[in-house]
Length: 46
Image (cartoon, rainbow, N blue to C red; front, top):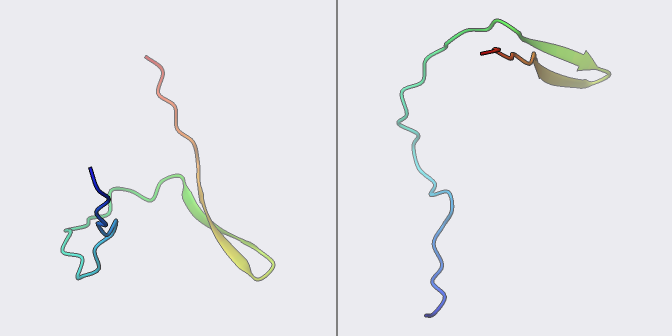
């Protein structure tokens, strides 16, 4: 078997239809000049 290169992430227009599910538990926090996205953990017990 010989090595064959395949691009991992082909470049091109993203045609994925995105939709917002919720913003509950998500916020932006700023530390100095940096902004971070904070996502609260959610566990569902069975």
